Length: 172
Image (cartoon, rainbow, N blue to C red; front, side, top):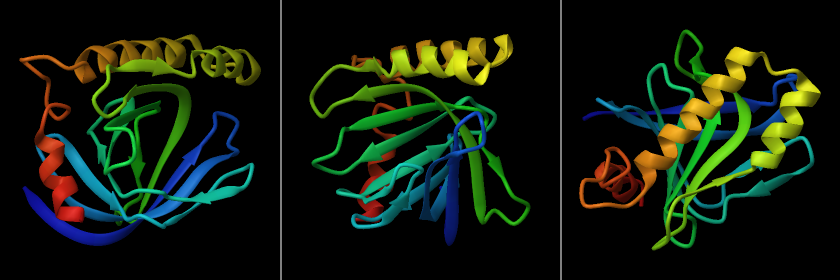
């Protein structure tokens, strides 16, 4: 586990380029699953509609060359919240992370079962923004994989089973 602590601007856009969400996180480190970012409780988040302040701390996994990110939250947040997005891209010095939100989310509430969220928004935006067939297919494929990987079970899939806990514990 490689550790680090640089500031990272997370810039999430919609397919038309409009702002979805933007906040500053701390680069915690990297392991075989990808880069881990931490966001403390109370960090302001900008969005197109308005903004908000994080109600709980969380760590975010940015995997390599995948169409998703995963957020692991401290209480009272959901245990796991995965965003289906285009493959996240880092700027050359690693200080900005950019991705396009493709609307589909896989959420596992604390103590509950994983479910897909925002399928209606995905369908609406796919039509409105004209998602290419390739993009829609990758989003649906990532969503299906995440749903299976995030489900609870005796042979849980990492990093969704327990690996995230050491990163989250280190953030607190």
